[in-house]
Image (cartoon, rainbow, N blue to C red):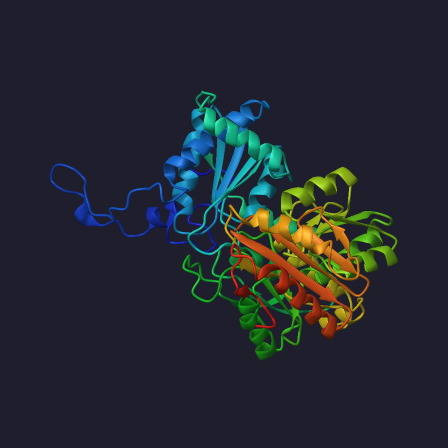
Length: 498
């Protein structure tokens, strides 16, 4: 049962229909209760080895992470899950694994990833687990793991976890289990930290039919904004679009809604609530690296001279603005774990990625939280008299592609990047090659990036230039490098020239 201090279930937020709360409060079929026993029908689908993630694997991973934490004398863990149909059963199996290693589990149920991060701080230095596939298409699942507050495991931690799972040398013990509702406390703290400015705003919220949407909408309303929610109903089939703010196709719907309702801004959120997308008052996409420049400029006013960490996919506008504002721009590897670790090392007040992950360590906890940054962006807008497009027009102007993806198998994609690295160094104009993460080839009038995706069997491609003509020229150059390779598909997602 929930703690006495928690509100009574069911939650005031929508439920997925596939979570234990839904089954606890919805109709119970009378025919289950027979004369001598309880029995009924179900879909006879057993876990298979063709599915890399199932309940048995999740349990083993729970045992592995519990052992990982035991080595660090960490006993308390908070765990939540997203609203996909299979996430709760994976979370339950993972929890049983944790309990078998002597970990004490606080289960917060249906939640965003940042809610888990918040709970780590709020409950007092807990480890954290979120069962989520984030923005990946339906059918994917995963685990975001952290042994410290505001930090998720990076490559070294994942290698150790893998070694424990392979060895099967698990810690043993008898942990405790508690359920806790955390979202009301989370929303209350956010709205206190980031109050609305004097100017009222109308904001379209695209929830992507995930748990993230209702939480963002609730926080904005609590802060005093007028919202126009779309795709707020929880539906794990994602009938309108994938919950990915980087998808050009997904952003068309919110662009139309912003124009239809005469809204000041549109905010899109991904499936687990750690990535934010911004749409201007004209329905135009504001790419997240440009959003980062707005956040960085705002943060540097309160934290002068600070470092701003950004990933290799970002526009040159980030370094231009950070330098002009007296900050120190630091380009680093893509990936929320990498960025958080580097930001902590440099004590950076603000950091971000082209994908929409933003990290505010100067005025918040330093983890990526799209509800918090949605409130922060609304606050910046409501404190001034400029429109979103007006603010963007004051930034350095470059032309760029969306973040493009092209299929390349997990076994081949890193070899492809190595091939591109060798070929890029021989391109005309002697480009400067940055290989901190993939291949970023830079000329005076533009650059391109090719890197292996950390989440999908795909390559990630971004191109930016001073002019439209140079952008197309660099696009053709990247095509000439990738199209001859059998390990790379020919169709690119978000391709503006297709």
